[in-house]
Amino acid sequence: MKRILFLAHRIPFPPDRGDKIRSWHLLKHLASLAPVDLACFADDAADAAHLPALREALGGRLGEAHVEIRTRSRAAAGARALLEGRPVSLALFDSGRLRDFVARRLADPAVGTIFAFSGQMGQFVPEGAGQRFVMDFGDVDSAKFAQYAADGAGPMRWVNRRESEKLFAFERATAARADLSLFVSEAEAALFRQLTGLANIRALSNGIDVGHFDPAASFARLDGAARGQGPLLLFTGQMDYAPNIQAVTWFAREVLPHLPGARFAIAGRNPPPAVRALAGERVIVTGAVADMRSWLAAADLVVAPLKLARGIQNKVLEAMAMAKPVVASPAAFEGIEAVPGRDLLVADTAAGFATALGGLLAAPERAAAMGDAARRQMESCYRWEARLAPLAAMVDPGNRREAA
Image 1 (cartoon, rainbow, N blue to C red):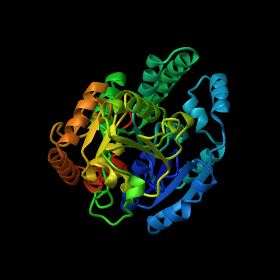
Image 2: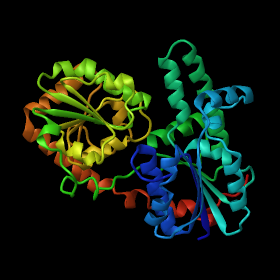
Image 3: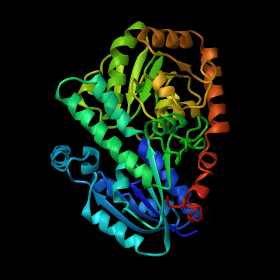
């Protein structure tokens, strides 16, 4: 197989947040099929410094790499997007230097496939490129901004509506010229097919490293002082992400008061002031943690009360792999192959969450059985090797779709 050029909006290492988890496993799998070159952005110098570790982890299968620290602010990107009539998401992730690197690599006849991870990276694939083009959108991002607009008010409602419309036009045009477009769940793929009428749309689900996220694995356990006494409920995630902020704020205010004696831990990096303000006698805000398994192992129950969620929630898969009973909102459950009532519980309202959580806390044997069922489901259905097995045929240049 010819070389693969992998494009990503964030350096795919280490796999310590949702987008990096998917991009890392995709890159690792692709590198097992053919040599891979990489063009990506980094959030800062510390993020860019992960390149040597990435090379080592790929065992010599990574060729040329361009890792560029992204410096454009959201305000500057917004102004540029308005001036140029395009989505802020594209202006925020744009670079002449990255375009030059891509052009140079595509001039090499040894490169047979372009694999772009995250929609904004589609802008770096030239019109008429001779290589096979696989576009992994992950989620329908334009639908997320449409939901922001529907739920918002004031100027941000207009901003998000504009972003949704501009971004959807770009997504549709990019998918139309790609050989194949991928989404993280069949629900997302079906939505995009419905919106665009395109047929070259496939689902390629996330998996879970069941060897790493294993309650029997070796990792640091929380001591009694860190964990505290009494039932512990846990939410995990990148805490500067708006849907996560909304979820934990709602849960702390609307659900926790109905669960006397229970405490709520919010574990994840970059909690903003609104999240830190929730900390108190019954709410723990950890900030970044060395190993999320420590908190998952310590928790009695894991909650995912997201009102807005797209694709598959890694936080839910990780908790289930750690044999933890999970109570998730319908949005957080969407796209996950599991049986409600056996593998996890699904609740929507504050009363529904309180009832589900209270019932599990009152019946520890039932909670343990649900956690065990969740672990079995992850082991049987969600191993990365099985989830990514279709990639070989997807990126094979011999499968290139004939031009219309």
